[in-house]
Amino acid sequence: MLTLKILQENKDYVIERLSVKNYKAETIINQILEFDQKRRSIQNSMDTNQSELNKIAKEIGALFKSGNTNEVNQLKDKNTQLKELVKNQGEELTSIEKQLNTLLLQLPNLPHTSVPSGKGAEDNKEIRSGGNKPSLYSGAVPHWDLAKKYDIIDFELGNKITGSGFPVYKGKGAKLQRALINFFIDEATEAGYLEIQPPILVNEDSGFGTGQLPDKEGQMYHIGIDNLYLIPTAEVPVTNIYRDVILSASDFPIKMTAYTPCFRREAGSYGKDVRGLNRLHQFDKVEIVQFQHPEKSYQSLEEMVKHVEGLVKKLELPYRILQLCGGDMSFTSALTYDFEVYSAAQGKWLEVSSVSNFESYQANRLKLRFREEGEKKTILAHTLNGSALALPRIVASLLENNQTPEGIIIPQVLRKYTGFDMIN
RNA sequence: GGAGAAAUGGCCGAGUGGUCUAAGGCGCACGCCUGGAAAGUGUGUAUGCCUCAAAAGGGUAUCGGGGGUUCGAAUCCCUCUUUCUCCGCCA
Image (cartoon, rainbow, N blue to C red; front, side):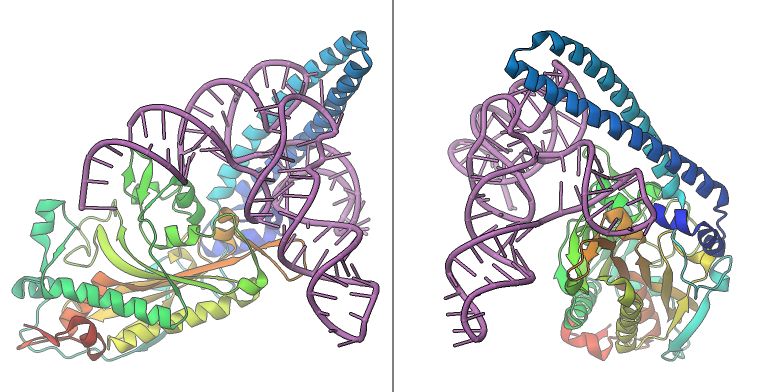
């Protein structure tokens, strides 16, 4: 979430920036500042009263020692009154802080100055592209047909066991999954990311820390009996490793990678673009996460983009990189690049990665701070993450683009992981 | 799942109602000492919020989390969580 400080000091700037995300912030900011004013005045008065109360309690202690019990009763009465006052003020303060916090959580992150304004996906800006769209042979079919033909992914079976959106990978299909995961993790660790294997169930605090809660509650599977959530991305548990931590500037950059299954309810996205592997409730993904000094976070963002670009290049997939416009960006992001690969038989671009700099927005929720060498004051760190990569759509594109009458050709780079060079 | 014990600062660890403004040690930082270092020695060493133009300073809260008793709680009570020991079950 945004800091109170920036609202106090730069209200107009915040309003202007949030308009790029098509968010009208003025009313809510004014409310926040009003609550903040109240909060401070109550805190101030409460502290004074508490101070008085503490002082009197000490006097009573001293009087007991000297045996002056008459005065003690008077002081006790006074303190009982003070205590009541402090208690009421405390309740009022808690209530105001709660309201203030609720409002503060409604404000999205400020988009970076380079973010183009726009309504939705159609206003995203293509940064660059690479690879060549393949020319398919005349018998080419979409990946769901290929999956059936070679018996490598079974959607109906997943439907029987769990429900739609939970496919079963079989034989070479399963092996291909494992190959991609290992390839992605090896690439990330070679690039200096520490491999992490996190829990895939998280508690409320973690969901809150990375911004899934409270507003995106409906997108996560919730285990009611234990109040835990199935993670929608490894970003959640991995980023929360550093919740409530104070680093020193020399610790940067912190780089972590993790493979996890990801679970998304995808409420409200029935019908369109959900065929085959295009949109699933459970899928595999390797994520990269960085924590960085605010002055260097955009360097890290570029580095991460390069890393992801390297992956799609090595897989020989036609791709393009988009900078998201204000209207299409996520709530928590300051700048996001999306990677799309072309899936030839569908004739569609599929999003396979989203690389974002959250600046201090997540860090503020997480209380992830650092200190400059020799300084006392703590500063919020910057957090970044990106998919590197999400598997299903990569698989869709690989199957469709590499199909031949003889079978599906495995890209060179994956063969040492799969142990076979063709699915047939 | 059952029985018992425990949770204190970066770490170890003392502390069973007021002098805790948390002893002592280790670590770390800075100084003195030294040709330089070690040893020695001195000082400092948490976080949030409020106050202050800022810094300094001051106030306040925080001894696993939450609640309670009391004029006053690290200390007493309730509750939750976690860890350890023993038992049971189990990949």
